[in-house]
Length: 429
Image (cartoon, rainbow, N blue to C red; front, top):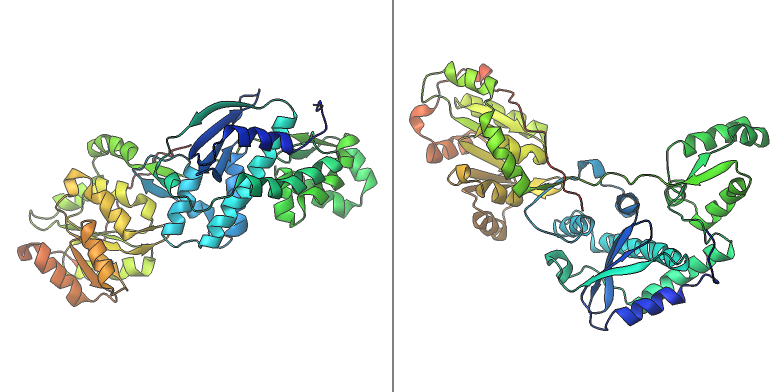
């Protein structure tokens, strides 16, 4: 690929300024000749988010890991009934609202993403392969009040030195989204020590882009690429494209509700066996949704002592499908769980007609009036503070369940492992 003119950032930003009115709020979509698409989002003429290309989720995962290293991406799962512009931005917004990440972390993710995407677009523009496909003024809720805004001029100043350095190193035809692979390993082995060769081979085998390598090696992207490019020119290393990484699971409530019909057709053998072995009126099932295994064990013992069946649900991502499956008569729900909260889970449970009147009791260590009001607003029946005692549990049972159904079951045999729904629907954007 050869550029026709001297590579520059100016042309792209001039086009952008001409296209975007000063107070424009909306989305600009661009596409190259390979049908890769990018989206730029604006609020009152300023950039707020950018996504797209062939590495959208790879980029998002890398930037999130860089600025939020304490959060494991594999544990991030979300329930939503919202329609959103970009799941990536939506997730950052939700985590910020839940105080799982700070404002500075959210801004860093957005800022880095904007710079990377703009760099890629400038490169595409200099290769004469970029065209505008649509401009829209309609935005979904998460974009209406943006976390961060960057003017086009500020964006230009951020990207300009990065692109200039890339071009001065004669790298303008090489995308940082390309991944190095060994083309002639035997030649590399001859020119390096065994230890360096083994490390190099192990690193390249991980299928990482140049940007990924720079991040994981904690090196400057330009410096690292300049070191590798001499091997590329000698054809010892080849730069190739990689498939994007998988999207994070965002479970759509409407898709999940479509599964409910199928779920209802499937009986739970272990639950039915347990119920059939006990006389009618002795089969109340209590669910406890809490990510702490110790809390579930303690609750299980207390509930067993009261003569009820018990199921503990530790993964918040499985809470809703499991509840739909087993239909408990009463639900204890922890307020603070990883990457979601009891309010959201309660709200989604209440949306299902079968659970409109099911008692839902929030467990929490908080004592604030605001929390209690919020719990009532989402349909919570009761709000009790930790630590939990047998007396508190008994009071809940006496209030919400018939007293004639208590104290019948052997406490050693009332904890039942029930099958859970695992076929959650991932919504990609």
